[in-house]
Length: 335
Image 1 (spheres, rainbow, N blue to C red):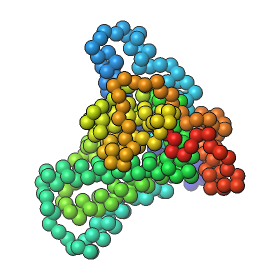
Image 2: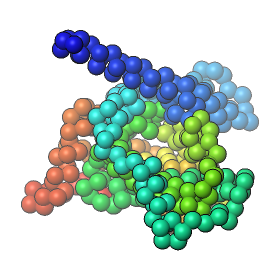
Image 3: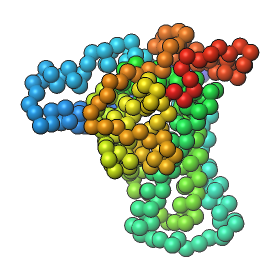
Image 4: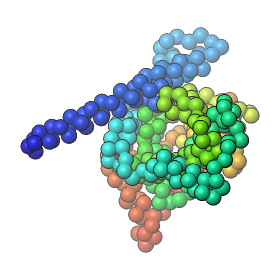
């Protein structure tokens, strides 16, 4: 086969891969940019904005689709990140992610070698329910730890800071992640999920978790109902005891706030329990405070390709080369 034919075959394979990823993104309900999740988020936001009063469509449109939040400089950068992180990151960096399945097999083998095979203490639906819950808690714990250390470790903060450089929040802000940030996240979560999988495989060898749309049912439901609204301008708060259980969209808006009183709070994904236990929970009030988003002054345009992908490496190098470091206007762990 000639080089041209090989190139055409590789390009065709790449095109097929990208098309499959795009279709999955649009059709899998738990995908944050799926048609179903976006329509559901719109319906929830519209119902919330119009609750108890009548609003004309024009007013509702302005509330839900502010132009700057959808196509402004920050939003445009979000969409570029979304395209890369959804379609391409696996091609370039997939081999750098540890296998949760390999960790599951290894940890289950170690438990069996140390304690022997056991008849699970639970069978049937109780075992399935507990397995589903344990995987959900493992994902949330991994998410919280990953997020926490990225705000506390200077080297990691500079890559995670890219996410906080968003000055507006919109549907694609969830994917505004530097590749280094994403790789660390995937590996930490894979470790937590793999170890939990090993424990469950040892305790309940013939039981699996309940799935929905190909994922753990609880993780999928959170991704479908809560996550698409977390990066939005709509203030939907969970207050009181509920605000200590789940992280509402208002919780995450506080996390993105550049107000010092909101810094280093609400690190979780959809569950507030780990923030509550660690003292990093900030429960929102019913009324939205005046909030501005961002991560302070930045040496270059934060929405440019260099500012988004290149400058974090410069800032990270400065953080480990004290003789070259400059005082930060916006401290580690500031948001």
